[in-house]
Image 1 (cartoon, rainbow, N blue to C red):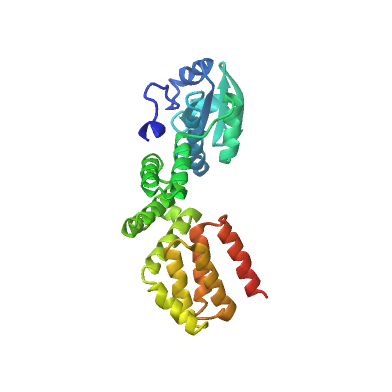
Image 2 (tube, rainbow, N blue to C red):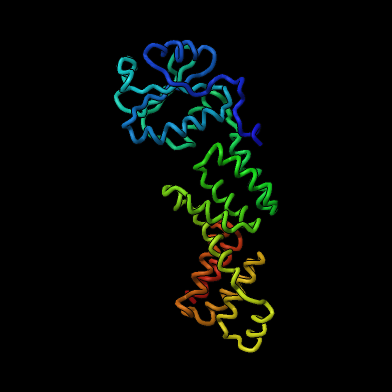
Length: 300
């Protein structure tokens, strides 16, 4: 796993800092060997703080076929004047000693990738992206140990990868380590806390903790057989289903409560449905189907 994500020690540096003294060697001469992208930035420039990491990510994904040279214009004003930089971030591409492409201002990751690919040809997935795909496959196969190991490695290299944080939480839940999952979520940075993947993982954790106190399935079924309108028994039975990964049955029981008495216990069944949908994710077939059924009941 380390080899998959780690950087080849023998590869030429993909990202370097340059200055007035080294600009010709780094950029003009360097572009005779491989394309060079120059990022003109400054510490006070907010868009630069977003663009810079995206540039580095895409350039690193090119695996040595292009070099990124970063120039702080506050420290190297002479270069900024020579290049007629009037606004930053400003990015130029050099090939064979000459500027051949460029842009000014913030760009999306897909736009940056297209810009770089005009110099390098198609760029495949990064090692981190490859590891994320493998981790997701392990998680879906319920190989929670393998998934946790891979997500752990990803987070060493990309600690702010929200999908990896969420995947790690779900892996720990699969291993029965709710306390470890809670510890990870409690330590999540504020700027990641509202990410959809993190919110979904938090919903999964809260449901897991709640379902531990759901009660005995046989007893709950007996209560429902005696009284179909024992909504608390049906609600608790839904939690039993969820705890056993019988998500469709859990959703069906909660929908039945909403159908029979939508305002029961301050709409607790509807709220639990929404939490399950968050835990499963917006594209899961049970989420899309469950939302349609819920809307049909609520607006019938």
